Image (cartoon, rainbow, N blue to C red):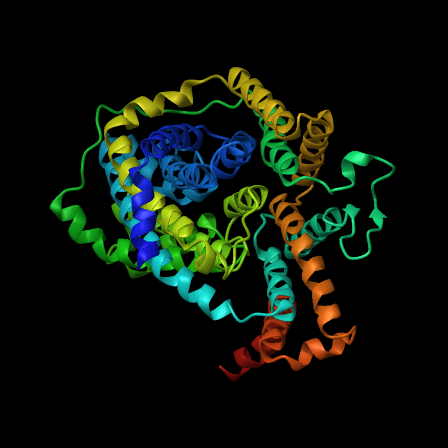
Length: 499
């Protein structure tokens, strides 16, 4: 309880409040710009938080996460182009409403649903993260190794491509994590005589490259794209009739989004799709979906914003990122020397709850900013891409250089920007690669510690109940879906004959 109120007391810092307000404004701009998203914004901002206090740095990154996720609805409703992928389903009903002259009503519902979903998830975060950390407090290296392996197995479902391509991308990230000096044997690996690589490939330049620069290259091929926009006079708060129609949808989607967010390697995009589908399935008027159903906006926005708090549960409690943006936040924690996991809630509990309270504050803040400033923020969509993306590139280069004042980091960022561009063009998501880079180092370290603990007898890993449990989950995550699909295909003809 002391940590609970101690974290709240951290918000008495006026500098922190000012930074959160500024980051909220910046996050709404980032989320409102088609092509940019919360992950890109957090990755670009990450190097500039290195010199800040840890609480300030992580609070800014989580603020960007929450605010940008909400702001994606602005462009989704007004120009039928989601500012973030998590708002893709918002386009389905938001833009038709805007075409009917009800853009203000649609954005009002998006603001209310986003705020309620975000608050719901942060409350769940405050309750679930310490409990999960307490359950994991007795984990030894073998259990951590098995848990990290399970986290890597979830990469098969996180990207936009096929499961196989996602696994290949994640394996590439794990391979990158082996660059540098092995801490157990002191042997240099894959450094090619470059002293700058002796400590490994840094998280920050890679994040900037694969999320920022690669997106720049992708958007360069879309400069001729013309978007249709809709005018809007003012946002309108939902009416009593609107609330009556959507309150169950908001509650349901908030629960769905929080649960999906907690699952390692899932995120707001998956949550919004499921939330939207469930809203349509439970609706009394499913035929209106796709033509301007207010329930569709509520289901999508409540789910994607509640996933932000849910994603922070495994990130802080177990060190397993719950979404791509959470992976960037995890990198920020590690850059500041903070180790997420059970010890964070025993040794740095006030820090953890300060982050929780800052996320709660942000969810209330962007409601008012979004409600009264959406017409202004909608104008950011008028920024010509020929101006926007050179600015993004400049921030990318400066951010990569600022961390260690090293041109090597700049070339790493540019190199991985090119690698990410070609990966995405050929259907390989860059998200599994980035998460693989983060978890790969943890996996190797915990495997080495486990071998020392078990006297090199690797088979003893399977004699530990919790480790065995995570190994089984890993096997089911990797091989369960294809086996189930094959079994279903084999049985379906027989079932059809029986009918």
